[in-house]
Amino acid sequence: MTTTTNRPQRSEGQWAIDGRAPLNPNEVFKEADNPLHVRERIERIYAREGFDSIPDDELHGRMRWWGIYTQRKPGVDGGRTASMTPEELSDRYFMMRVRLDGGAITLRQLRTLADISDEFARGTADITDRQNIQYHWIRIEDVPEIWRRLEAAGMRTTEACGDSPRVILGSPVAGVSAEEIIDPTPVIREIVKKYIGDEELSNLPRKFKSAITGHPSLDVLHELNDISLVGVVHPELGPGYDLWVGGGLSVAPRLAERLGAFVRPDQAAEVWYATIRLFRDYGYRRLRAKARLKFLLAAWGPEKFRQVLETEYLGYALADGPAPAPSTLPADHIGVHRQKNGRHYVGLAPTVGRVSGSILRGLADAAEAAGGRRIRFTPHQKVLVLDVPKRGLETLIDEAARLGLSVNPSPFRRATMACTGIEYCKFAFVETKASAAALIAELEHRLQDVTLDPPITLHVNGCPNSCARIQVADIGLKGQLQKNADGTDAFAFQVFLGGGLASVERDDAGLGRTVRGLKVTADDLADYVERITRRFLADREPSETFADWAHRAADDDLR
Image (cartoon, rainbow, N blue to C red; front, side):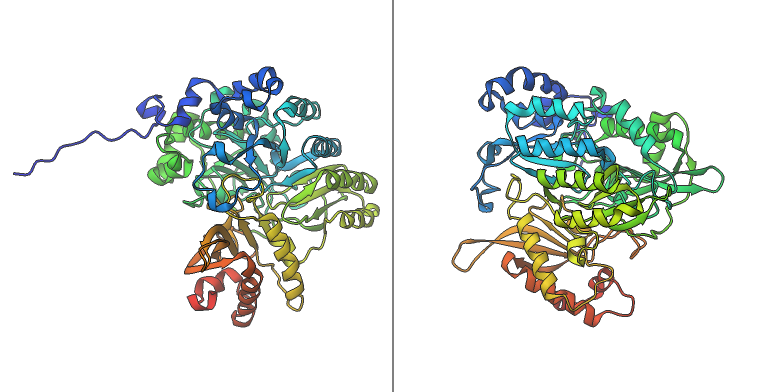
């Protein structure tokens, strides 16, 4: 006779079910001391005694909660990324991420960012695809002074990294666009004021990404965040937000799902707070690879998630509501656009988000000379100047062009993004920023005879983590290494084709496909992108998008 033994189910580290006993090293150091407490030790000890005084659990753990990571040691090639420890890969300098919720800053703040770049970061500055500014070459001795300057100007690095509520993406045209459904600025400000830096929310299972928009272009990647509030108009309740949860990419991509719930503007901050506490309490903590909110949503489903959210955390039921209308405008906001007050916002494209202290300062000067008043960074590594009067447009556009910021970029310059890559990132296998810039220049030359409207989006990532969103690009390139015939390592990219988010070109988001065995070396990238672009243009049906074509094309046509 066969008997079945009912084994106890293994704990997943869900606080609400399993208790708070830490189940992995990250949970241990978070439980031992709240990561936000490290700031006092940075200011009192580490900045005074230097890099060698920093313990490992601070250096590779808690300091992330203040936007600080060690950067990659120069000269460590991608072939050693997977075989070296964090200590071996780490330089004695830091990457620092400045948290800019909604990407919204003033000209004074822009000049502060420029000064910090020049004085403390060797002139480095990157616009990230989460509306932050990221520096490199930061010394621990300089961190307190950088914080002092940032905070004096109304900026900070609090919870820019770590298992915490990260920067809130916001529509770059919030409050100024004539097409806007609802201005998310008050909600973003309320959340930041009440909850960022709150120790109650600083020990999450993993990062918690948020996005809020009221613009019909759907301009904050709402399908890719842990929580998104997307502007809609309820037939009885008026303008408010549609609630999405559980999105994220990396090595296990999953698009967010609607809960079918309508959130009134006065409920929005409370719903955000309820959702992050649900994640804190029920999120999986045993394995970090399974700790994002998307895994909990996959296990529960939207119906149960909404039920727990309403009954255990809100204490009331949310109204059912409509889905967002299909996008009607480009989400990158490039070009000149009239604001609802009669002034203009001007969307400018750098090259893959790479700027510098001198470029930021030059932009502040150009904006001021043209009558502009405010700056917004975008989730597409672009920058907007707001409030420009008509008489100042020509001045701004000309001065921005001299800085390498284009109001009318080529299709590939407009639609190409790249992550940090091996230059500074410890996770990367390949170089990205310079490779992407060179690729853009080559494609501008080779494809100057064709028209690409809309542009083909091209995203370049140095590792599998998909910081540059490779699975939702027309052409996504995931950096890896492959062996040459002589046994040496070569930079190469796995190719994803036909991904995208909801936009003017497509009603629904979808992930890109791969083709078995398709890898392209860095040296062959221009040949491959030119070949696949020309093949698409020759083979497509009338009005067919690149994504639609890529999903129907035979594998051999995609090589």
